[in-house]
Every structure is written in C-alpha cells, then in structure tokens.
Image 1 (cartoon, rainbow, N blue to C red):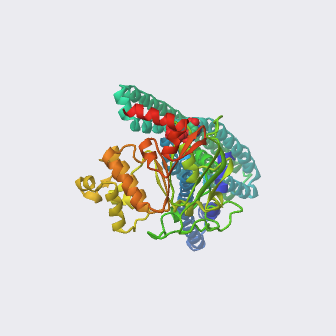
Image 2 (image 1 turned 45 degrees about the horizontal axis):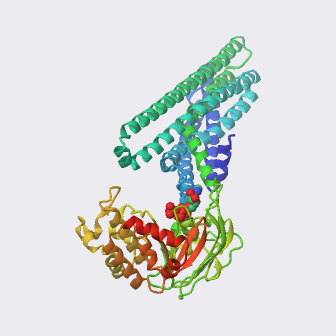
Image 3 (image 1 turned 30 degrees about the vertical axis):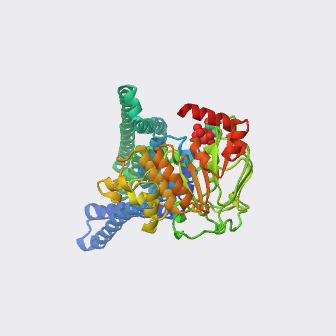
Length: 608
Ligand SMILES: Nc1ncnc2c1ncn2[C@@H]1O[C@H](COP(=O)(O)OP(=O)(O)OP(=O)(O)O)[C@@H](O)[C@H]1O
C-alpha cells in the first residue's frame, strides 16, 4: 500500500465503516455468486444427466431465483454504499483542507500558486471521489473474492484450485508491473494539468502588464505548449490503460481456457463428475473478474490519488500563525453591533495546549505590547523582525513609518495572528495573544490591507462583511465618512449592484469601500496598511476627519507611506531593519536628526 493510500485510510476514519459495509456487501455478493454456480450446476446435472422431473428441480429453481435476487440486490447495495462512502469522504476532506488553507492564512497561500491550489481542492478531490468509490473497495474485494472462490474450488477440485493459485498471482504481478509505470505517467499528467491551470491564472491576473509589455502572445504560446504536454501525458496514460486492459483480459482468458481444457480432459476420462466440473468452470471467470475490474478502475483513480498526496501535504503543513479552527464558524457571528467587547478565550476554539480562558479586553479599549519579538520567514536568512518592541495605549492612534522591507506589514500579520513570533511576546491588555482564541481575537480587529479585496456579492454585502445583520444606519455613516455615497448611487443598482470578477470601480473607490467596511465593523482595534494611498487629497482629508470623529476611543495602528497620514497620528513609530528606531510626535521627530527626518525630506522632495 502506498504512502498516500495509508494516509488516506487514516484520514477518512469517520466514514471507514461505510467502506467496511461496501466490502461486506461485496463479499455477500461473492457468496451469492458461488451459491448460484453450485445450484445452477446441480440443476443442469439433474435435468440433463440425472433425468430429474420438473417437480424435483422446482425447489432448486426457486432457490436459484432467490440467489439471483440476493446477488442483484447486493450488487446495487455495494454500488450505493461505495458512492455514499466516496461522497462523504470527499466532502469531509474538502472541508478539512479548506479550513486548513484558511488557517494557514496569507503567509502560506501567497507562497503557493492559487491555480494549483484551486485545482487540487476542486478537480483533484472530484477525481479522488472516483478513486474512493471505484478503486478502494475493489482493491479489498480483489483480494477477498478470489480467495473465497479459491477456497470453495479447493474443496471441490484441488487440480483446478492449483491452476488458479498459480495464474491468479501472476495476473496480479502483471498488474503491479503495468501499474508502476501508469502511476508515473498519471503523476506527470496531473502535474502538467496543475501547472497549466496555475500558469493560466497567473497570466489572467497579469494580463494588463503582459499586454503593455507585448508579452501576451508569448504567454499564449507557453500555455499552448503546456496544453500539449498535458495532451501527451494523457495519451501516454491512455496507452498504458489500454495495454494493461489488453494484457489482463488476455491472461485471464488464457487461464480460464487452460482450466476449461483440463476439466474437459478429466471429464472425458471420467476422473471428475460433471456437476463438480461445471461448478468449477462457472466459477473460474468469477475468480479473475475482481482482479480485472481492479485493473480497469486503477487508472480512473490514480489522478485522485495524486491529488490526495498534495492534499495531505497541505494538511501536514504546520500553521504559521495562531491555530484557528473557528474562522468561519464564530468570526462575525455573535458580535452585537456597538457592544464594547471583552475577549473570552474559548477552550477548544483553535487554542493551543496550555491556553487559559482569559478576558483580555474590557470596554476601556485595547492596549498592545510587543516585547522583543523576533520573526524570520521560512527559507529566509535575514529576520524580518529582530527584537521589535513597542507599546500602543488604549485609544491611541499610532502611525508606523519606515523604509520598504523594514517589517511593517509583518508586524500587522503578527498582530492579526497570521504569523507567530519565533521568540518574544505580544500582549493584549496584558494577556499573551497566543493564549487567546484567535477567532475571538479577530472579532476585535478591523483590518484594511494595502490592496483591499472586494468579494463577489453586492456593494452592501461587502460593506456588511463583518456582520450581515449590521444596523443600516451604521453602514450609512461609514459610507458617508469616506464620501462614497455619490459613486455608489451612480452604480447601476446603487448599493445593491453586484460586484463580480469585473468590479466596475476605480482603485480609490475600492479603497474607500474597504475603509468604510472597517469603520462599519466597529471593532475596538483598527489596523490599516496605508488606507489613503489611492485617495485624492480632498477625500483623504475628509477620511482623516471621519476617522477622528468615528474612531474616538478606539486603538488604531496605521502603516503610513504618506507622511501626511503619519503627521495626524498621536504618535509615530519609525521602523528600520525589523525594529523601532525612533518614536515620538511629528514635531519631536523632525527636531531630531534621524531616519524620520530623512524620510520626510525625501517625501517632500518627491512631492514638490
Ligand atoms: N512571505 C515572505 N517570505 C519571505 N520573506 C518575506 C515575506 N514577506 C516579507 N518578507 C521579507 O520580510 C521583510 C519585511 O517585509 P515587510 O513586508 O514586513 O516589509 P514592509 O516594511 O511592510 O515593506 P513595504 O513598505 O514595502 O510594504 C522584507 O525583507 C521582506 O523581503
């Protein structure tokens, strides 16, 4: 059994009973097959050789009818159970892998190719369903049924049993030989498909850049080449599938013929009774049938098994941030609008060992303390944060400035729980962040990323993302604060306009909606990665005023690429090389000869 297969069986533990039931029904079907052969041979023997009367064979015919009914019922039941088993296992695995991907968060998904992940979770799992429904139960039955039939034949006729005991394993040996090369080829086929999907998605995302630089034609050719590689791999897989079917059929046929000839010779010389010979002859094809079927299903399920390998790779990836199992389940639900929250760390809601229930905040707001935090990205030599320490008081608006790569976004990702410090502590109102339920913690935070994302849904759905039942007045205030009413009204259906793949909004309008969404969420901590980067000066000014008015008493950390944003903060922290190198108000920092003044001078030089 392969590694992916072993892992698969372990991970589908809750639905393993359905697999056992499928196999059980399959074995019952086998018993009916044996009984059918024996009864049929008895009837033929009685009618044609024994001269039995109608009345003598009538009970046997009834028995035969009953056996046929049982066999047909068992066959239908086996397929039904197998389908149910595969569907439930697939749904459970998809649920787990999607949850795990969400828990892995941006630190993982940004590293991987989105197209490949999407392929694995959609097509890959569908292929796995085929493997689970058709191949896996058949793999067990291909051992159980031939052994059971062999045992029965051995009781009847040792010579035929010996022939089957030699040819059966030979058939399996051929199957394994062909299977090994099929596995290699199918893996190549699956990899080619994933590469093509991932590349296609990348090209679609970067279509504007590719067109501007005149490279879209070249990328079209690359996709065509990838398509051709996939076609070649598919043809090779099909060739192996046909070859293996041919070899298995031929070998099973020859073995059956061999048994038949031997039975015929012995029958002619009177060394075996007719009834026994006929029973063995009827059962011989049934002996090979499960192995032949296994060979036929093998190719159908291999792609699914390849996808399973990738799925387990994802499931085995440790979560880089705080453990989170309640992302969708609890986040957003249950936070009553406007209620000043206290963070109740919940046992079992994604908390690590040693977590304790803790009230981390009170209505007084959120105080944050970052103590000597070190963090290094995997595969990176240089730490992104090296001994970062800072404090943000409850209700304070702090701006973080610093050169590109100084660790500002990394800090926000640590505060959001997407990453975990290598060493050092992050305290929320004195409680270590690592000991709080991450789902509860995220209910306290509103976040505006550097490149906000609008989800498929109406404008209103996007504004009420934190709580679909949000008070309409709160949404209206948030929209007014970012001066977004006018452009929303101009949309075809106003706030009910559906935003699909092709969002009919400018970068600045998307940013305004993202800020409004954060304001409407009404959470005690606001994290923003330069919210005004794409706003015109008038809207930026209005937004700053709105923030002052609406955000009174809330804690906010704002990464400021524009120094005009920094100037309005209560305090400015200047980061460089993963730590805070200066802090103070704008005037105090301008008075000192340091990085802030240099950044400010460069900024003034840029804008003048
Ligand atoms: N996913 C990642 N994997 C490896 N290294 C990373 C990753 N993300 C960021 N880094 C590195 O960590 C350091 C800090 O990056 P970070 O994005 O936090 O900087 P920043 O101050 O936000 O930059 P910017 O202002 O350009 O957005 C940089 O050296 C960056 O190259």
